[in-house]
Image 1 (tube, rainbow, N blue to C red):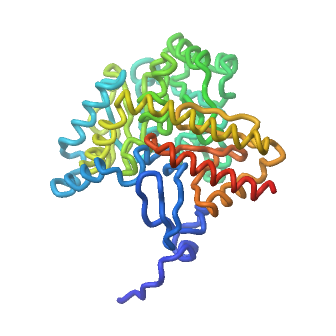
Image 2 (image 1 turned 180 degrees about the vertical axis):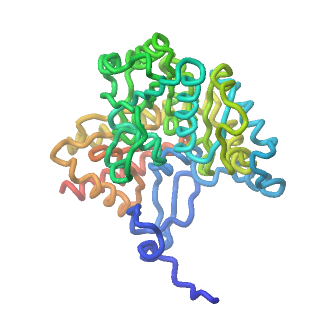
Image 3 (image 1 turned 90 degrees about the vertical axis):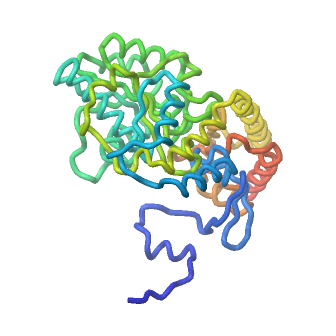
Length: 405
């Protein structure tokens, strides 16, 4: 049966893709560094980075080379066998972190799913079969599987799909007293993002994270850090936990790990990992040689002091640009975040215009994100040039002027 090929346009999306997204009206077709071009050749500065994914920009030559080289050697085996790229990547991740063991998957949701299953399994096998409670936080985001979206604490993402996984308790973020009020001997884990990304780019305070560590130790619970968005240099350290001096028991990372190639990882300590046995958990594509080869190249570049120091420098470029815009328009009530995970919260007067601002920015040739209902989010390449930052800020300035008048 022959299929008539229709033009590949934005309108085709409305006909063939499940209607769970509302993508922009243009279709990007090419990227290089921190610039993207659409089907009509229009150029955009990329302050979105694929939502903190393209940490080295688009088509970084080292990642392209790793992908091309591996593509000529071995694509897939499944976990009936192991492979060299997965072993090398695991060795480098454990050497760079607190962890002894790694589990590879394909997305942040899968890494978090594995983390939550591991936390419960460890507690029920080692301590008590009734130790299953997970404490999480309002406005968190941990993925779109039913378990992770329930832990995430945003009912708009989990309501309507039937009975939810039980024994999950949500309390306010950065409120240690609220955690103390619900933690008990049945708690197996506290799950926290060092910076809530989807929840508005809200950092956890050092005191809060320290307090969570102490509470976990007191109640024989595991501390799980979701670093899907904050990991891989995003905050100016390889992982955000390094800023606080608080070491988790389990850590998840994804997004920037593969620089755009789907891959994720859950990291943990030996004593926790040893509770698992063959067949407890698994995945078909996790540890894929192609994904791990690209992720290894990405890790080699990002885990470098000079690059990480450059993240701090670029953070200031963004802060300076946003503050200059704010001096003109008084649009932001707060500019917060760490490294190159930055959020600018709109004043109540303009909170309802967030989508308009993002659309206007695109019209002027700038890709930028939202976080929640009233925060502009910036997650660009960790090596974005000063020229691109300045040009992007000029485009944002013009877009805001267009909206505000």
